[in-house]
Image (tube, rainbow, N blue to C red; front, side, top):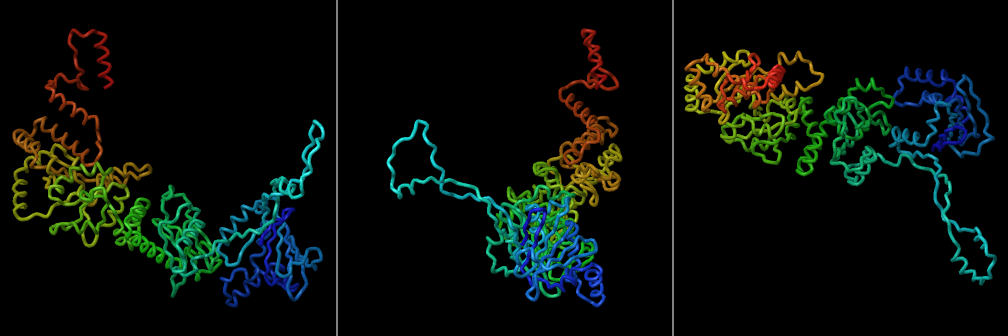
Length: 636
């Protein structure tokens, strides 16, 4: 029991066995005699150091907040004594004739320092008890003063009338009792408020705990106003023994991926005594949204943060927690509605887990959900995708991009749509990181259709036909490569295009166009990485497209024709945009487009203004207007 007394005193009292005078001398004497020395002697004799507090080492921490400490104690075999010391190397023990009898037990009075008065605040005491001793099996009470409203009879006489006394009939006694007015007054009462009402339900059998008890415990633990989405209550026995309760919240916290955020989701207890709530070794970062309690029977009570980092027991606990979390996610996945809520809130965490957790990558891949060209408004899993694959199809095809509308209208999908092959659409930036780590699912290779090497399974006739077309277009391929130079690594014919004239694919092991866009957006990126990871582009031409056919005829007639060069450059720049890249020189692209517009409007090229030769106006143009036009062109 704790209570705050006047004169800046904090009193802590128990109803234990108390201490005799001899106990006071032996246990609360000088540090050198009863504390550290006894501790070290016992340690060298092979004592169990996990029994923190048994050597009296912790008692003197009271002087961190108090100038003077009094210990009033009563043992059944002795009188009531007061032990008193101001930590100056001496203490006094006197028989207690001042205070009222405490019956049996001990009371510690801390005379607080001027700069430590915050520990006399009710709110602060409640906060400390809740954090460190919320689940201690014995009750901890705080004596508090509360104002309560009370109804009492109003005995004040009615004020006399100014006009003088009037003769009134005297009513009966019974009527008077009924008519007596009542008033509400505020009264200060002293109550014992229990601070650790929440019981450690993890110590009970999961079958005996009701759902509403889990909800109540979850709200007390996390201060959430909503119930949890799912709960996992389990115990591990054998070589290692611990109990745990893990919760999945309904919503993701807004600062979930904040790097400087203090993590306090999993609280570590040792035999129901709180140890810490920000232990990074207990659960991986990708499971940072999981809330819960872990109570170990094997860790020592006085374990430090440094010891925790080296402790093998903690690594075993971590492995078990991850395993149980995955089991819980699989249970959520059985209910589609619940899993949709879960995935909307924590889908990014699953993808981060695929990127970071090599051991559980395959299990996490089962939980992935994505849109596809055949899934409509519903998301699909890789498992469902495989069930819809044609017999000939050996790979899982996917495409990454900035938005769903952008990837759905991508030229890369044309051939796949025509052949009825389903493609998974990935639009979350973290998808790029996760999918490059995943590589395959159930022995099916994951193939990005925006990279080279994404080809359909062909029969002999189709292969023969493609080889013939390849020979036919060798001249154009050579011309296009000469015109574009180092802008592309090579030029080939495409077998995935149907409606677009050309497209730009990237190297199989470099960044995709979408990944390049993501990396360029990093504020603190290392630009040196771009030099070797940046995409080596391949221009793929559609030999069946009218533009490419006409371009081939024109190039065969005269490969040095300026129009051919302009058209090739324009096709390259438009394919940059449709393939998800950004233009290096947008102004030259705009100039080429303007030239094409002029051609469509039958405007002679000589009439168009150029940077080198400003357009000359006709003689009819006024001089002032001519000067103004020249200035505008100069700015351009």
